[in-house]
Length: 113
Length: 111
Image (cartoon, rainbow over all chains, first blue to last red; front, side):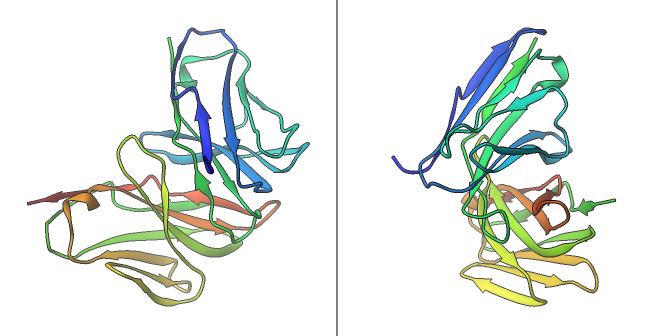
């Protein structure tokens, strides 16, 4: 099916573990984004990518790593999970980085114990 | 700094009209997005304003005043399914083009 998907949808992990959240889009959009959503903070940008092999930091990148070897995939890795990384993570994509609307995936709910 | 403010919660009655306000203080402002987000779901696009004035799209309208740093989303003929969070986001440039989101306004529509 066309669109943007995320996996897993729910994840429980322990402090110190490495976790990878997957994001896949079928529109061939150039830009992809990772956000986290926490109560009272709204959506905050973690990392974004303008194209394959081009990534850059957003507002809150510490503790996260991204890669983009293929246009359609944009995985987000928590190298050593901390409790403060408990959040809902949304992946988004847009055709261009400028005025084009961003389309969001369904989200991954991550709990770090 | 970059700042977006919107009320945390609002309630309204089915069939009524509600206005959700958003004020922003940003540099490199290009335009203002509104997204709708139902509980446990992804945000979905509602509107984008780049010029001053009102843009109408069915039951939903969005207004922008660039000189005042102010926008609102107007929802008419409210339905129960309109119960959701409404996210205001400023589209800004500077380094890279990005969205700066407000914390969202949770709207509860009652019968």
